[in-house]
Image (tube, rainbow, N blue to C red; front, side, top):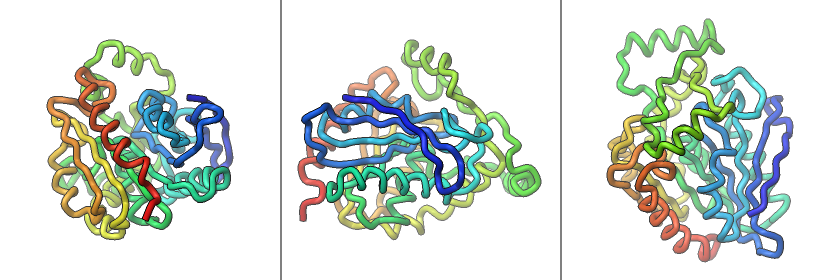
Length: 287
């Protein structure tokens, strides 16, 4: 797998960093994909997972969202949902300019898993495959109406004001080496701005209606650890029957946490991902 890094100015006006994960020289590019990371996260953490796509000829780009990783912006602040969809679309268009006519996909983890499902439903044209890992389905976290009302008010009065996201490394993974790797990563943060929190509340509440726009021919995989306490599996399981994709697979990974690809027992995750890729990549884009 070859790696490349660059930056560009997004339509929202912010300088956006992105990581390229490319097949080796001479290996034909059979597909292209944009990967969307989660809250407080960044795209350079996902080489181990995206390598499975690259090995099968899929050229992947992982941009850092505004306020994350090496992209510009106040930590934890994303100005709008449209800004994220623009970044996804811009990177997909960039890949299509390099490899026109090959099948395209959207991939994402956690908050990025939500954006992957949301994007393929709002912009289904030309999207052939999608992987959503531990997707955020309901950002309310069953918080009371008083707290939600307070969040809405602060979103207007102090949009960039942030709080601790409440996400703990040990709730994502149990492998001591992977925990230490994340804790020592200077690009990771635990901030959630009032504006982003409010936008996610609104957008996830609309998701059951939004997904009706999904292309029935989309090839879709959702992977989710059964022990995930950050994005509970019951929510993605409830949404799954509503998804119009006829070729969809839900992999419930017994006992694994929010990042099953970094957890003890991750072999089960990779078996599911490899199986889906082997059944999907040779056929994407075919009638």
